Length: 86
Image (cartoon, rainbow, N blue to C red; front, side, top):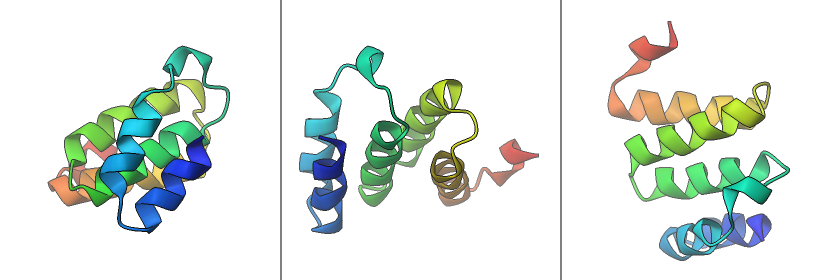
């Protein structure tokens, strides 16, 4: 399902991606890609604060995932909040 979210986002249909990904219970998520793709879709919707929160939840489970770290960096940068990284 998370690949569908990524594909929809790349096709310019990020809102559909968010709806689909939000229908998956986070408690059953076993791969970082769920959080990566949901955060990525939110970034495309310019929902930077929400993308940050989703990414931080993902990092609690998958703390060394470079894609999550990249999404967090983008979310913070686009909010003008890079100071949180230091």
